[in-house]
Length: 507
Image 1 (cartoon, rainbow, N blue to C red):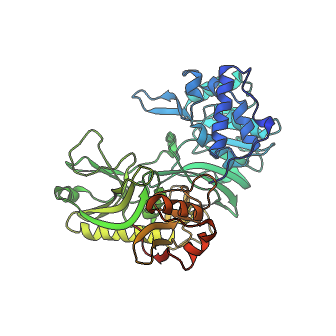
Image 2 (image 1 turned 45 degrees about the horizontal axis):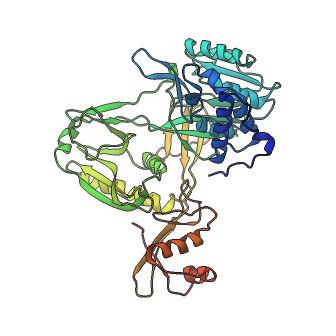
Image 3 (image 1 turned 45 degrees about the vertical axis):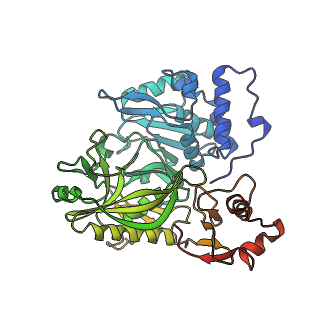
């Protein structure tokens, strides 16, 4: 994770004498900088300048400056159709866009506030166009931008799938920021060579905010992927989730980036307790494993996402997927899905969980073992990597295409998405004393919980200012009373001594 910027005194003015909204605005910027979401003085200044509350008059200033979304439009049946994104995510995406004074920028998905932030970053010599399909959204954005003095932003009402004639400047935009959840990226021709595109892209229902650079006719990711959620794109760019319901179960399967399979034969599979395949791969209660699920989406044929009706507690799946649809594969009348089992409380009380695979149906044990093997492959080869590299080519590209059996290629309406997983072997270790008694488990660090490439404690973390070796010594003292003198850290942990080291798969 990128370190917070060290801001000069002029970028953190005192809040005394400011009105309530101004004080809240500076407090929010301080919070975002401390968390590492603000990383440059330019983004810091923009977030301290633009009055977010003016773009959210429906809520009090305290809510407008909370680190959360503000819903601004709803459909007739209730769902949110437009919102002001969470400030942490806006800061991350603005940093990823690498905007400079004089840049010409297109924002797809309007609201006004983010366009004003972009206008601050590109300055009076730059140009900002914000576009949305909903006239109610663009009318509102126009009013708020004028009210706050950003009326130089061009507001356009149109379907982003096909940009209106004359909207793209000569040579293309220097940057395109997409602030709606999009299944595809049909804007290649609108972006200049070397330009930046930042978008929340959906891959098998996983939405990642990704920063790309256009180079040699393709988009190349070069920023850490950010898991996020956005209001879905509407119009011609809307996607089909390809959802199928298993009869009589309340279980839904979606093949958003794949070919749907028949599900009628799956109903009997849920009548019996599942086969459980143990992977011996563990995660902390607060540790994300979204990279694993994206890896599985490419590595496993007939991959789909599994969800259960929230109001239909029929006990078919125990436990049902929490928060997000789960990873699953279908094999004829059988199915396997990724789940977790809590195995301990962990040092922080949030728990340590083993990733397990539940198999249903006559061949559920085979499907579960197939998925479990891929989980173990990811842990051995890819877990320690910061993130995969994503390359996107337009479908009309006449260059070389990957083999049709390449599992990590997703073909969309306008583009071909290739995901390359760096191989960085993970390492685990077990510390024992001379008599073989267990002392401590260690593993290679995994972003974003710990620093990549360094040792980490299985259930703990380094404390402020500690090296990983120092944290290990502290944990040994706290957990089992083993005192390792400061001068003996290297000797005890990396050489002969009372704490031997033994490689073993961690659990």
